Image (tube, rainbow, N blue to C red):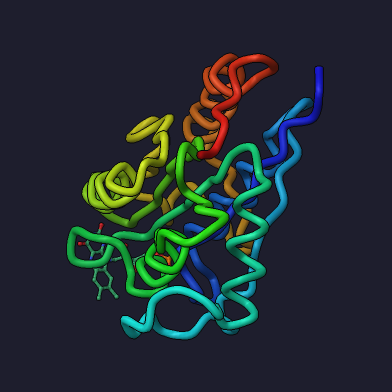
Length: 189
Ligand SMILES: Cc1cc2nc3c(=O)[nH]c(=O)nc-3n(C[C@H](O)[C@H](O)[C@H](O)COP(=O)(O)O)c2cc1C
């Protein structure tokens, strides 16, 4: 089967982030044909200020191009006040601007989250899914991987060691495969 190119973005820029640990576990647990590349240029992305369209700031243009060619976008989000952090909202808003190549139109997107509380960030996933669907993204998963009490599942080295979340992630890759595998891939508009 052809390789499935997944671009993964974490919504946290915090050192010791639980969500970055989750993202790296998702990368490690992705078997063939998935190939997961982590995008980590948050510091280069300016705030969205309402000046829409081209020319995009260089890093924004590069991100829009990279997302456009990815087969799947994986967003791993913290929850801040039952929503997503501003840093991730800016990224989504830059990607959502309706100028060619329209990176989110028809784009298959997987969502994951981690939080120290019991709900694991499901409210953030709800908001994120809503924003993504509004601009025509195809949200493939929500709530499948929402790691509650995440600090108990992640060791001091930032490794997700919890058996249950690791099993959930592996299951999610298997479930997503037929949705994005050969012949079923969404074609961006
Ligand atoms: C401003 C702020 C608001 C927060 N609100 C929530 C919340 O609504 N729900 C929740 O589960 N955790 C909330 N938290 C706790 C975060 O889930 C926690 O800090 C988490 O570790 C952040 O993700 P990270 O470790 O990937 O950076 C909040 C944290 C901050 C700083």
